Image 1 (cartoon, rainbow, N blue to C red):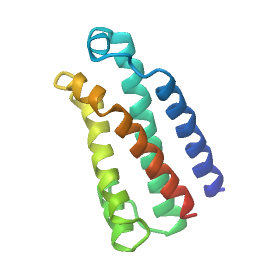
Image 2 (cartoon, rainbow, N blue to C red; image 1 turned 90 degrees about the vertical axis):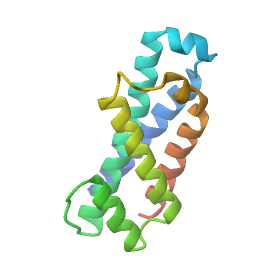
Image 3 (cartoon, rainbow, N blue to C red; image 1 turned 180 degrees about the vertical axis):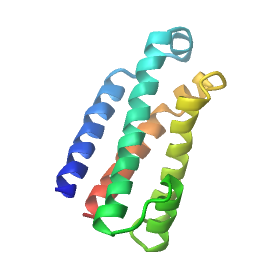
Image 4 (cartoon, one colour; image 1 turned 135 degrees about the horizontal axis):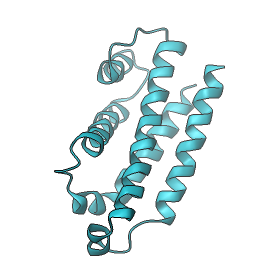
Length: 136
């Protein structure tokens, strides 16, 4: 059952990545000036990261029977146990920070920085999702 939930979340992430790739802003100026586009892009990135965090938590609590204490603690625990590699651990930390910035620091979010790192963000989301699912 838990594997089914994890795979559904992974499929959801892949659909969102496809949407985000197909709707990549054409240029930084348009992205900076189009609030509707920003909201759609930020939401897509946010829900991808939240689904990844859900996969990590499900993997930790249901597959490896770890107690949930917090997102970062779960990342660290799975890293220390050798369940996830260091690069995945670091990407998880960075992505969770990006999600927090999108959700909580909307007034100080640097739109141009998101635009400049857009392909890398999508690449990291896909990479981490693939690595997590391949562990199951």
